[in-house]
Length: 610
Image 1 (tube, rainbow, N blue to C red):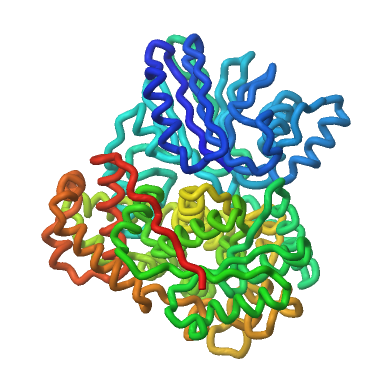
Image 2 (cartoon, helix red, strand yellow):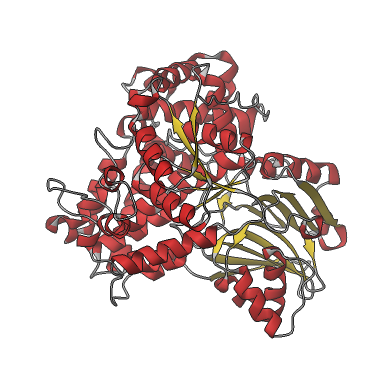
């Protein structure tokens, strides 16, 4: 897990080395163990890397990693690298390190671009091929690791975060993406608020500079939607458990200690049980906002799992203090103002993981999208909506929309947002048409592409990497996706008013015998489910921070940058929901950090352990 940056194009336009170094330095939090910049002026190429050493921690595996064939910078982990290495060694390849990085480089030399389809794990790769002078950019199929791209006529710049690109290229607010963020709470395409784009997940982009201009290629390597619609036998409980356990085992591969983020919900508890049985004595950390830990159901359930598996268990509390400074910290690192308040406790947990001496943590994200954990998936099971996918999209949008905040857009921006919603509706209908026999599967695959990537995975990456911690997501692994896609709807969701588990049915059944009964039966929502952040003391602090973002004169330049699209008088007068007010506060702070002051916030204040 690391941070990467690069520039490629017309050698006459190559930024100065101080600017290139500033871009690398902007990502210092992502890779505290090593920092290097390689500049080849004659090629119009600069590659920077900040390393978080996890596999083969020796300096021999530092990047940019150079072989006779290529130069590579890479963020993430290829978890099947040992199998690929063994195959390459049988073909006669030799290695000078024990890292996955070298496996990617040697694999490309032997197999060409076909190597990218053989990688399993999470990655954002930039590989410069010496002989052809081509640069390849590739992301994993789920979009676990971010990779942003700025393109212009004579050059590209790319990085793990937009703040690095801002050091070498001008950024500006993209009003269309702003409309999505205010309407949905997350981007609905591979685009950033700052006028740059995300490299699409599961896609290879190839660039070549030939003096007179660019040659650009795009190839789909593997997309998550390709897992759906194949039919075939569904895994029984034992087979499904085996697939998940195998994925967790693969995600434990590391040359440093691995921890577990344990909330006490079904997903993280399954990860904890599978990991604990594979590697006894692991540390698990649980986050709590409760002043009375005995009254927190998440602590109660997490403690039960930790005791059952003999895990070392720490409970992390966020101390009551000025939430505004923490919000700015989150905004700076998150960059995109995603309407997911879990970013704040996520940052606190990441800080605690790092303080406990860990660089790697396993998390439970992805299970809801794969196995049917969200209530809006039930819409696809209603006959009248399953038969009319346009209406299904409308109901989905009503369920997720931030309607009051979207109404504060200025007329032209509102028209643009409505036009984009119509285009998104048409795209959803076409998407469902490709999977006519599996309406729920079509809905889930659409959610994987949009909501999962930008409301969940981007938040996880940015909050943990803000503290130099690699978060691994065992549920987001191609074999687990294949198993979940083969399940019929009734093994994912049951009618909500019956006894027992009603969502993620198959997943719960697969691990019921290994979990404490209260955890196995625990619903995602409701009185014994996930703690509602808006019912805790944190909500008051966030609301105060939101009010400050509307009034503070120091933030006026940021509000002015957004004024062409957002009517601030209407925002101030509107009866926004707490989530919408959080979105506004995050938006203003993020724009101020990225486009106005461009200053790092104060360090994270720390967490408390009872």
